[in-house]
Image 1 (spheres, rainbow, N blue to C red):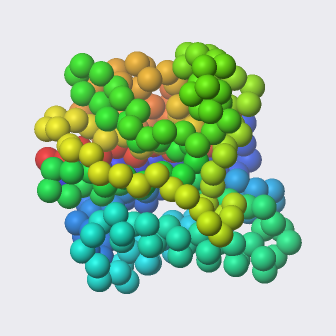
Image 2: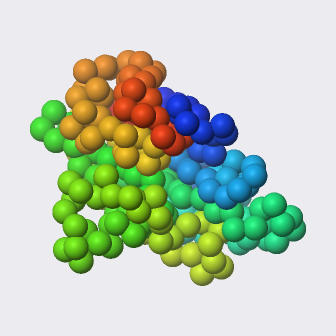
Length: 241
C-alpha cells in the first residue's frame, strides 16, 4: 500500500475544518486505514468536530478485537458519534457541531467503505472515474428524485446542505459496505472542497498524469484553489501495490 493525504484551508476560509488520517500499516485488526472528515459548526467547532471524531474513531478501531471489518468500523462510528455529541453538550460554543466521515480499508482484494455526509470515495483507472459513495445531501436527493440533473448538482446553490452527519443525532446511520477491488484502480477520497471545485474528469486526468502521489494531491489542491477555493480542500490518494 502506498498513500498520501493533503489538506488545505482554501482561498476563502480562515480556518481549516477538514481532517485527514492515513495509515498503510495495521490499525488494530485492520491492515490499513484511510479517513477523510469535513467538520462544521461555528467558532472552532468544525475543526474540533472533525479532529475529535477521527481521533476517537481510530482509538476505537485499535481497541476492537473483532474480526469482521464492517462490524469493527460500524462500532467505532457509533461510539465516536456518541462521544462527539457528549462533547458538544459540554460547551455551548460546540452546539450543533458535526462532521462528515468517509472511511476505507483494503483487505484481501476487497475495499471496506463507510461514509456519512458528502465526503466522497472514488475509484480511478485509465477508462473512468467512478464515485463509489453516495452523498447524503439535499441535492443528491433531488437528483435521485429526478428534480435536477447530475451535471447541475455540483453548481446548485444548496449543494452544501447535508442530510446526515456524525454528531447530528444519537442514531446516526452510515453507509457501510464491501466491494471487490480490481487491480490497477486508484482510490481517491476527498471533501467537497475538491469535488465542488474540480469536475470528475479533471480529477481523473490529474491523478493519472502524476504517479507521485504527493505531487498529485498538490496538483488537485492547486486546481481547486485556481477555480475559487471556496472551501477547505482535502484529498487522500491510495494505491494498493
